[in-house]
Image 1: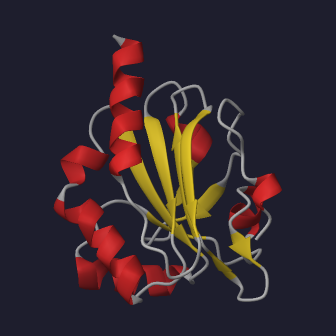
Image 2: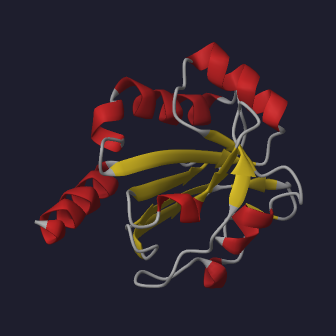
Length: 161
């Protein structure tokens, strides 16, 4: 993992297009001008901490996604794995596959663990203009605290008013 390549607050977020669990293309640029986006990188489908974190999003979806913000979960698992995982857990937000080129988007965000071939826990709040407004990167095995995300989202909403 190379922390130096994590997009800085105030920088334009790297654009991407990935397949969701249904095989549909989802691009960050597709939300530009319409919604803010929270990009949630996670290491592995079906793993304990990852499932707990994504279930936290699922169980309180209104606090993470609404008419102003979209959640995009991303791992390096294959699209078919993402589909089985999303179906098993009841994830109705996009679960994106960064499978090929393997981990390219995770690399662009500075959260790819080269030796393990997976994305670590990176969370990025990107505003409607495509600018990173908040981020948090946790190492493998470190559960993320979404409290900072909620505070950043509130601040983003207030700046629009």
